[in-house]
Image (cartoon, rainbow, N blue to C red; front, side, top):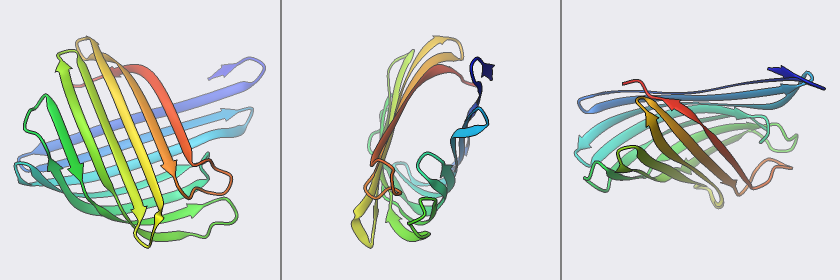
Length: 206
C-alpha cells in the first residue's frame, strides 16, 4: 500500500502445495491478485486448481482436476472446469523430465461483456510440460496447454507458463516467470493474446 498523488493498494499471493504417497499425488494451487487505485478496482484475478494423480504404470498416470477462476481484465466473471485424462512420462532421466497429457473437460463460463451468453462446453485439454535441472542451482520448467472446443475447433485457447529458477542460498532462489495466453474467441473488446512477466524471490520448504 502506498500514497502519493493517488492511494494505491495491491495484494497478491501464490500458493502451491502437493502431497505424494506411493501411487497417489494431490496438488493444490491458488493464485490471487488484486489492485485498487483511488477506490476503483484496477485488476482483480484469481485461480484455484485441485488435481489428483494416480500412477497406473511407471510412465503412465491418470489425472482428475477441478478448477475455478475469475479475471476482471478479461471480463471473466467465473470459469469452472472439471476434467480427466492420462498423462505420459516421456523420459526416465530425473534431471530432464518431459510429460504429455491428453484430457477432456467440461467448462462453464460467465462473461461480463453484455453480449456473450453463459457457456457450457466440452473441450480438449492437451498439454506438454518439462522440468530441466542442468545444474545444481538452476532449473527450467514450462507447461503449455492447447484447449479446443470439440463442437467448434476454431474456438481454442493456448496458454503457456515458463519459469527459470536460480538458487541463491539454501531454500532461497531468484525466480522469473513468463505467462502467455491466446484465446481465439475472447470476450468482446478483449485482445486475443495477453502476457505477463514477473521476477521475485522464492522460498522452498524442505
